[in-house]
Length: 311
Length: 257
Ligand SMILES: Nc1ncnc2c1ncn2[C@@H]1O[C@H](COP(=O)(O)OP(=O)(O)OP(=O)(O)O)[C@@H](O)[C@H]1O
Ligand SMILES: [Mg+2]
Image (cartoon, rainbow over all chains, first blue to last red):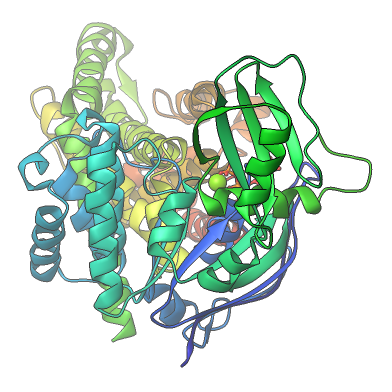
């Protein structure tokens, strides 16, 4: 398999001195569905900004399908489509005109541009809005318009920076289906998201970035297997004054009637109930604390905190 | 192949720019028509009839070339500075930056857009002047060349202004404090030969003086300055500004972080 995207030691220090990227290296294979995860301010948008020529890098190199972004600019750029995190439309421009202009900037002649614009507007359920000014669209529609705009030159690599932020559940599902369809047609997709469920259900590979560094880069399955502890939330029958000590288990009293217990995967759950029984604590119901990936994510990011520091 | 794709991109910008100023014509095409008509009525007709000759022509004939030039300057500059600044402000400039379009194409596209508006207004003002005086053209080539160069030069200047602008105020500062004084003192309303020697010399430092005079030469056949040298200077100045703008754009000054 060939690489759709190769980042080599990409660095960025902003004019105000913020070191947003401390040397990022990453390889995304053609045809992959890749998640780039990280807490706020980790450097995800900066990375995408460098790939899409919106941010000047301070070092390193970017290659798209083997074309160097600096030396073979045109060939590299024709293959990338970007959906930015923030809306960046001309407020007064009409939906249809936005797509036509974007196609034009990629050198696509007018007739073909009109055909493509119609195709993608229909695909994203915006055809009825083609004559509306972009400022008249709802947030979810604007997101979809950004996706349509990023596809109008039919790039092989699609990069989406939080494509489903502020999008309702139903629409999010249909956007997922659409992205899966694009991926099945052979497009490489990279997305950032704060909805870990999204990454877990869509992406095959995942990289986690924290404070400008990649702290994990692996396939989703082996990452989830790494998760060695599972946290359960127990609703108690009677209130407790303080967290009971259960041998070898990490326990936290969330409130008087809710207990959180972290159980290593290697230990049978029975141990937990035996220990609870010994203390005379009865449990009414039990559930997983969070999505598995979320837990892993928090642990990875926590582990990465500088010694003694962090909140 | 590569040329034709940059050509499509260039064409896209120009079409977009023209559509923009035509759509908002009450802000772009109407005001200069009204202002210039007022100039023709007040300076040309009412006051002009008391002034008598200027440079060998009646005052109305004398100021028409200057007023046409003034409209071209203001409008090519104004179009680019406000349009390019607003794409920067709304971040829709990112649509261009992500594309494989070259910096040269972007710059040329905006210049062409500014020139289109400058010429459009120039033609409107010229047509309006026909209600007040008759038009004559002595040297058609010189006339066309100098109008075109002037429009290009001020379109580029507007582009540079937009690159450095960080807020809407910055878009108005240069036109108000630099452009307006330069044009009013640029020999639009008077022949600089009327000035005392010192002020005449100072006026010669004003590039607008050359543009207005060469244009007046094209129409009326008279000029306060050397026509060929002026044209050469305008070409050089335009070239200099072009490469400065291109360099700024390539570096991403005021555009990329
Ligand atoms: N234009 C800028 N000037 C200065 N610093 C910036 C700029 N843009 C981003 N930063 C800083 O760079 C760091 C990385 O920001 P970035 O936007 O890449 O994070 P992110 O991972 O996309 O976060 P989020 O999940 O909140 O979108 C942050 O510390 C941010 O404050
Ligand atoms: Mg971001």
